Amino acid sequence: LAKTTQPISMDSYEGQEVNITCSHNNIATNDYITWYQQFPSQGPRFIIQGYKTKVTNEVASLFIPADRKSSTLSLPRVSLSDTAVYYCLVGGGSGGYQKVTFGTGTKLQVIP
Amino acid sequence: DSGVTQTPKHLITATGQRVTLRCSPRSGDLSVYWYQQSLDQGLQFLIQYYNGEERAKGNILERFSAQQFPDLHSELNLSSLELGDSALYFCASSVAPQGQLLRDTQYFGPGTRLTVL
Image 1 (tube, rainbow over the protein chains, first blue to last red):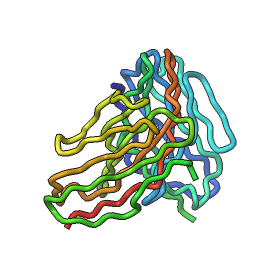
Image 2 (cartoon, rainbow over the protein chains, first blue to last red):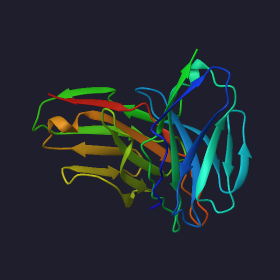
Image 3 (cartoon, chains in turn purple, cyan):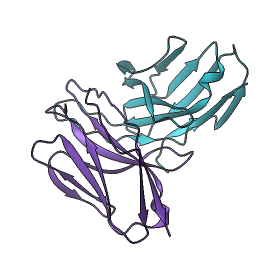
Image 4 (spheres, rainbow over the protein chains, first blue to last red):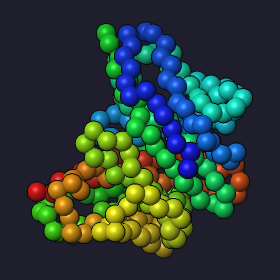
């Protein structure tokens, strides 16, 4: 299983761009990188997923270097409602099943 | 609303007791995952079922068991409960198609908050 490492916490002011990096040195060839957002007492919510290079959606961007040993979630112009825990998930596999490893997550605090 | 439902929302019980948590996946999803989230801890993967069969096992205690039924809903059974079992239990579902380069977004339910007194 690919183990992930993320910063435990980050603070940012409203309107700033936030970049959260996740290390996954032993990522497997078939693994995808997925980021989830979790608010207190709620289930995690999918944000973005990628395999290599850059992926962008209406919420975030995901940057993955060529060696895929890390990834960076970029949240443009954060607001107070972006205060949450962000999980980097590396998983995948063959044979139709998935082994998943959630890290400890990064607690993002957005400051007014 | 993720489309995943979990019941009950809250459960309060005593040590030594046994409880069953229920999960209904999104329509069309064949995989169900169970997670435990204790206070101040991240999500701990417990177990995964795919189309009725156990497919992956994580940090699940022997006192815990799960199953997925023909209609694809799943139940997590927790027995001989201890104070430390108090946690949020999440169920997630995904399509989990066969094959290589699996990319499978999980959709999480609202969770069941278990309190063991």
